[in-house]
Image (cartoon, rainbow over all chains, first blue to last red; front, side, top):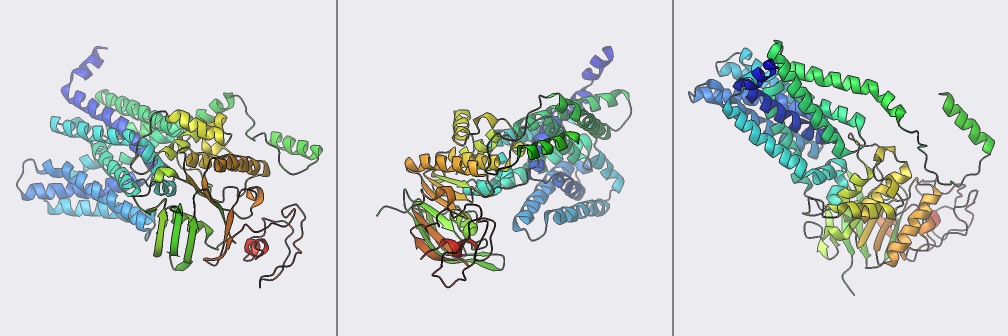
Length: 312
Length: 268
């Protein structure tokens, strides 16, 4: 117990825990929209592009002689991530290149650009490790303020505009026919995804950012029937794995980002494993609606069909 | 004459390289129930999708309720039922959530007060009130189609545009659909509906427009269906006065060839 209070008393840990908590809530909110529009890998694409942004920020910082060199790294990541996600949305809209091809090109371009530019800026690819795999233990007060502001924005838009964002993600054609500002709403989802990537970058790192957006949603999907509850369950799971994973690293010297993601996947595996057992306990209901059809059949033939079903 | 509800003039639509609609004029007045008939590929769906603003015409103008397509259209007075999309989306959503999205239109991005009651009423209209909290992916095809109809009805539109609302739906659901439509049309709803066969709607339709190869080839009284036209085993043997070849169908609705509906349904 005293060890726990010790952990909560550590200002470094306090900041890290607040950041992890906020990211744990926000990432699955945005992830729900991405899964809904079948863009689960978009977060990865943005993460890769954000790496180029980190290196560009570094280059500009070094050029201006700022101390430390990487003071512009996070703003650089925010800008690059937003530009990258807007670009993907434009490409998706034009439909010239298929979405997955555009994502693939983003993956390669982002990493290659990042490594190339960091070299020009006088750094080494080693400097990028903190961004690739997270560095939550080094969250400064300034970082924390930025994280709070961005997460507040993500939650405000992601939850406040849920019906409209749901409409656009669920059936874009119907949203257009309702006169909704579909273009603006699509852009909102793209920008939300970009901001989420940059805030989650500190916690789990750019390479694992998408896992925090997608895996909790995958767990939510297993246990609910509704969009709203999938999002809520995803957020709860996100918070739990982030806080538990981070706390564990206070005692065990492992990478917090990797531990958080492994925990999330473990929860998914357990829930997916238990799912058939839970589903069986629900009262069995005949899924076929009880309405007459206009076909005449022998009753005998129907019974045989039912028996065949039972044997399987 | 009052302002037409739908007014399309000289509409051309290109989809990729193909010239799908080739100069369509379509006017629907308040209180009319217009059926849009034609074979597969004749441009029916393209026309209704253009009318509700999903596709942009390459030429021509379209006005909805007196305003040219765009932000000026009072979208809350328009309901659209697209063709059913078969694959369920990535994240499960309940029937109530899908129907609630019909309450958003134009610049209204948040659900209005009392949306739960409105959603339940709309689901009740299509006979699915008890399935409100079920995932749409678990509903049958006909039920999913009815959820989409409820989504269009929830905003209490003055004009309803439906794209094949009864395609692949069993006979009893078609009858239930016709009963719902009868009630709404009695209340003054204007309807533009794409159908393959008039079927249960025959008594409601006030005018029929037949498309063929992206052009209007008939605009007027609904074509008379042959007595027990869609009865099983019915043979099409009545003479056709058009230039199209006489042919027979044994099972109506399964024949969707180039001369499927247009040739058999139009009796000029």
